[in-house]
Image 1 (cartoon, rainbow, N blue to C red):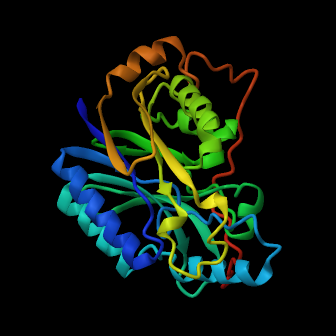
Image 2 (image 1 turned 60 degrees about the vertical axis):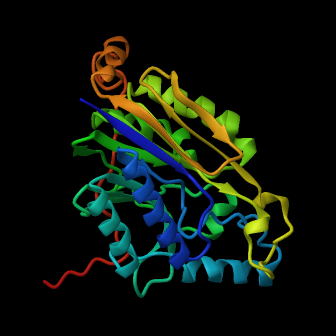
Length: 306
């Protein structure tokens, strides 16, 4: 079976309300082009926290964090329902990176959420390890929610940013038979060679399609008075791409423009790649190497009423 996949490369909305509006508009646009799968960048609602390395300026950092927290999204919740409804109207699978917070809780998570073509939440995955000073913004995922979903567009899963460097996480997705991988990142230029190496290798290693979604960003988009508004880290040129099983680009990385890129996905093409290397199949040696995955949820509170 074949279908059209899309990677959204747009600047974030910077607020929850504007982010939801932009998400809906992008879903509608991609659907008009015939896309059955639409992938958005990392923490695209309300935006990636570019300020995370500036905690030494406590007042400005606190104000920036407060903005991120207040504009994070609850899943489920009224803003989430609007995005889900847009996916249902488009009859498309949507994968979107968000800053997520639970209602009445005080922690933000870097979350990749999956929506089916009926608007139902297939699942969500919280980033396992925020990278470097990202740990000052996001909590840790517990690993229980990493999954692959059996859908009409193939067995669909993904990873967030530097999770792609976690070999056990990549292998875990291979054991679940992933066919289409959503790969979400910020749009910083310095990440271009890292992402090229990581995503093309993953397409080869797991014999799957990889849809790379990255945002564009500029300090010119910031409201007047934004903390750290003059810092160079607000510049992000994108770099979204779509990669075939085996590592060949179907759409090479696109930079310096807001756009939606498209490519045709044919799931039968994964078969030839797996003939060469099926990482969790004929190219595995479980008598030598085995992965132990503690997939149990790890809540901070367990109530024993007995």
